[in-house]
Every structure is written in structure tokens, then in C-alpha cells.
Length: 485
View 1 (cartoon, one colour):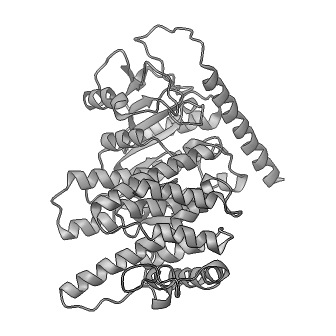
View 2 (cartoon, one colour):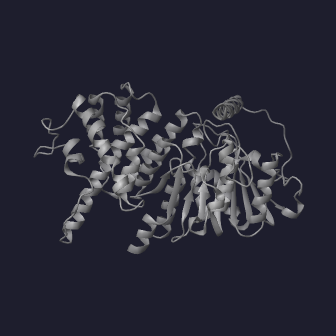
View 3 (cartoon, rainbow, N blue to C red):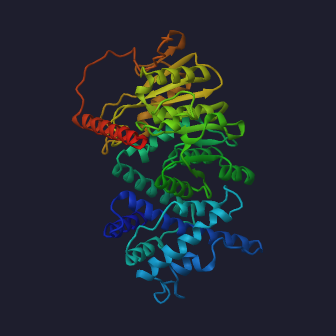
């Protein structure tokens, strides 16, 4: 039922002049879903309060509640067409009254970690793009059929929402910008193994895949948690920052659908924070992230970092090392050329990483891992506070080319997870002592000593994907230059 409802919503939005692609479909579906979720949440809270003889005070004023403006019902539970707004009346109410009302929650909330603040933050960042009030009525009627009141319903809804994010990523310029393959995220979370009571952070949160999977991991490993532990899990465990408005909205909604009622995600450009200003209270125990790569930051942003570079991913890596607590653990996806680039910034950053952290594992991923992005990536696993002595490498070798019809799955990574526990050698894994690394270049590139180098012809699609990625990277650089000029 849920899957067909989502498909029907997309079909309706496709016909609206204000929505032109999958990105718009997800954004517009998200805010309407969020309001329906709020309505069901408040109903649940009211019922629980009544069971213990208490009166529940609604967050949303009566005239702005879903049951009043969006889906008023007759006594037999059907839509009351005499009260339900539609056409221009509905669009004017949403644009001129509802959204301005919800924006005010940000200023009136008691603190940033409340649901009220999240409501205000979300509606500060979006606008209703649906141009026809009749289209909007059609979407609302479909969303009204969805239920968020059981864990099974929420679980199914979260999976469907993930699929929409995946499709949105494929529709964007870079699939990896919005969607990191969930099998890879789950594997990274397993290896880093966050613990209940420790904080988890992603400074390039995107659609919040890392935080959602870390939440699922902790729930699974602490099924018998106490009420106080559950409160910690809900409110004082997961933290994120996101620069782009659309990703911020989607990341927040994704966490809500996974069961985190008031996600601690801030809409901000992480890289504008000066590392000199980071204090102990600002640090986190675990960092999980896939920061954007290929972008170029302006000179004034680079001044916030001790190692000056325009490469976005290198700036993020400096940020992650700095913001991690002593003894903290990280799992970071980064372009594989970071391990071997010979520019001064890359060499300095590799030196800084291995001198301040124990870079114990490097997972080398095959091309095609990120659909729509032809570049190759690695995952860096490290602990802060002890210098690196030995790095264990694992090169993921598959007997197929990855792509839309053959995506990465958890079985592909099973051997890596098993061998990583003991750091054993195999055809695909080996260790390198830091003492044997060239101290002038700190070249950490992946070179499997167990396999002979074979010259293989690449698949045409892989070459095309890489050309596309390089074109986009060039465009980013040109845009940055134009902004500076």
C-alpha cells in the first residue's frame, strides 16, 4: 500500500508546473509527510497522557492541525468536502498562513534540541513549490492514507523513503551527494561500533544515512535499554550539520521516519567554523561521514584550517580529526587519490592523520560503488590520540561490475568485516608498517602485494562515468573562481 501511494504521489507531482524532477518530488513530499507525522505523533501523545489521567497540550494550534485544514473528516471517517480546502483557497492558506506560522516555532522554542525548534527550522528552509491547489489537494489526500503509529508502519515507511532518496541521488549531478549505499554505511557502522552513551557526529550529514544506521545499530545492540537510556539515545547521541537546504530537510525527515523524534541536525556550512575555536565541549566520540569531494572552497573558508587547500574533502577531514574526542573513532569515505596526491596539502594532511591518529584500516572500494560517480573511493578507519604504527588494507575485489542493476550488497563486504577483526592477511588484504612509508611523501596508496598487476580494459560505462565526474569537478572549480572574481 505504502509503495503504491508514493508512486501515485509522484505521478500527481509530475503534472504540476512547480515540480520538475525527482529532487522536487522528494522535497515536496517531505514537508507534507512531516505534517502528517506531527499529527499522528500528537494523537499518540494525547492518548498516552489520557491513559495516566493527564491533559495533553498540543504543540500545533487547532486551526493549523492536519485534521482541521488538510483532512477534516465526517462522522463516518470520510473526507469532509465541505470543510476541506482546495484550489486557490488551499494554496493561499498553506503559503500565507500555515508556513509562516510554523516558521515562528524556531524563535519560540525553549531550546534547539526540541521538536518545536525542528519544526521551525524545517519550515524556514522550504517553500511550497506546488503551483496548483488542486495538485496539492491530491497529494494531501494520498498522504492522509499513510499511518505512522506502529513501529512496523514506520519501518516500512523509512525503507520507502530511503528508496526515494536513492532515486533523487541518481537524478542529481552526483548520486553520492545524496545517497551513500546502505550496505557500505552498515559495514562502516559495524566496524566503528558506536556505544550507547557516546555521541555520534556527521558534519556532512546529507540524507542522514550514517546517523540513521548508527541509530538502528544501537537499538539492535541495546534492546533492553531503560527509559533514561532511551532518552539519551533519542536526544543526546546523534548530531549533524548540513549546508544544503534540501538535504537538511530530507536528512531531518529521514531520521524522524527511523524513529528519532527531534534530530539534532543544524543547517550550516560546517567549513565556515574556525578549527581554532573548537573546544572540548564541541567534540564527539564517533565520526561517521561521506564528505563531498571535488568541490573547491573559497580562500576565506580555507583560512579556518591549519592546512590550506581548496579541496572540500581535505578540509572536512581536518575538521573531523579536530572535532573528535581523544580516544574517539572515525569511519570516513574519501576519494582514493587522497592517499597518493603529491601536492603540499595532501602530504601534510596524511602526515597529520598518521601522527595524531591510529589509521588502523583502509578499505579500498571498486569503481561503481557510488552510482553515477565514476571516481574510486576508500574508507579510512581511525582512532584519535595514538600515532599510527601499522595500517591494514583490504581491497574489495568483485567478480562483477557494480551499477544500478548490480549494486553493492552486504555479502560483498562480509569477508572484509570478518578479517578486519583480526587484521589477517589474504589475497585481498595486507599490512604496511609506517616505518616503511616514505617520510617525504607519506604515500599511503593501495598497492596489493599479493596480486600481480594486470592491465585490464575498463568497461565503457566506467570511463563515461569518470569523464562525467571530471567535467562536474571542472565546473565546480570554474564556479568557485567566478565567485572569487
